[in-house]
Every structure is written in C-alpha cells, then in structure tokens.
Amino acid sequence: MLKTVIMSLMMKNHQRDNYYRTDLLHSNAGGETFERIT
Image (cartoon, rainbow, N blue to C red):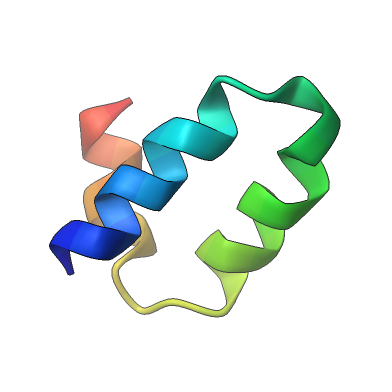
C-alpha cells in the first residue's frame, strides 16, 4: 500500500507519466485512498 502511495506521488510530479498514474488508479483498489491524499 505504502509503495503504491509513493509511486502515485512520484507520478504526480511527472505530467508526462500522467497516463501511467491514471492506469495505476484504475487498476488498484487503493485508488480511493490516493484521492483523499491529493
């Protein structure tokens, strides 16, 4: 879970990888947690 959050934050800093972050959210049940953090 923590790794997912860290990766999500890293992706957030790279707009060019935004497509990957979106895929990560859609493929991970922890997406809701990520939404709360942002």
